[in-house]
Image (cartoon, rainbow, N blue to C red):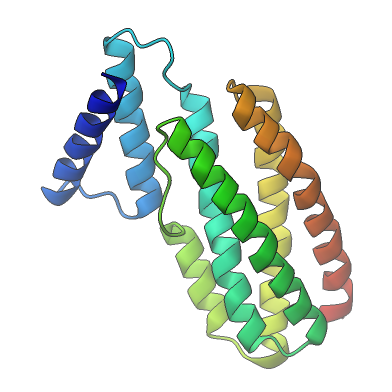
Amino acid sequence: MKTTTALLTIATAAMLWGCGSKPNDSTELADSTNEAMADTAQEMGDSAAFAEEDSKFAVDAANGGLAEVQLGKIAQDKGSSPKVKEFAKMMVADHTKANDELKKLAESKNIALPTAAGEEMQKATADISAKNGKDFDKAYIAQMVKDHEKTVKLFEDGQKNVKDAEMKAFIDKTLPVLKTHLDHVKNLDKTVNK
């Protein structure tokens, strides 16, 4: 019954999306789908349904992770500094791994995730991609500092607010890696943006 309800909810969200009530990006579509699924589960008295905080965390974490991988791939090609390219390679590897783990976890909880970074992240990626050489390196590293500060806060808040035990375990496992990334990129920022 749970699967049927989830499929009907997703189909309804897809119909609305196709009929002009189109969210601007896949992050908004995932949020809308999760809200509709939560409402349907609540109406049907499904106590096993995920908490809204859990789905919101998962969508936001996936959005950030997708952006990190996308920007990391670009930085591996366009970066002028070997240290920037090395950091970008680490971003692609670590965030791809975390994204895959989150996707598997979300699927087991019937939480819809975005399939691409959101509109705001896409714009930042386009702005950074338009730069070259040291200007690219500076913009990329500055974005990585900003993104990792935001992501660390998201995960710290998730430790307090997320209800699901498996989601909390994912947060506890991933947060130290994110903090290491933040420390690394802040040190890199001091050398790149001299």
